[in-house]
Image 1 (cartoon, one colour):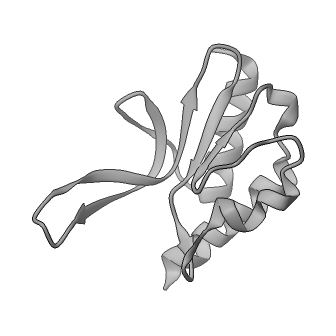
Image 2: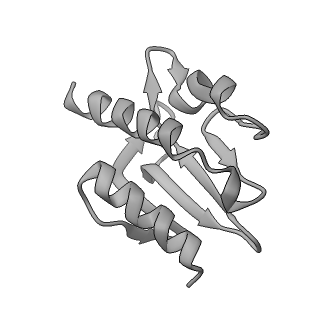
Length: 113
């Protein structure tokens, strides 16, 4: 396993206070079950990492109010085109661990509600 990926996984695990689990091809934390009014349901996670060829994509699938946490912090993610919950890094050097820590702290706060 890429040492930079190990650093990222260890960082997230330490911040969230739990070890990751595997969900399909994702390293994931904070699982949840969802069910739509239509009856469709499934299992997902609040924080995940997908390993890519040269780097990783971080998923913060949690909202604060009516906005995804990743969207709230996208202005602090220099050089990264952030989606609603997806933060695709082109290289591990792009990862701003200070901003990631703030996002993970928000995720933890949302879990306490």
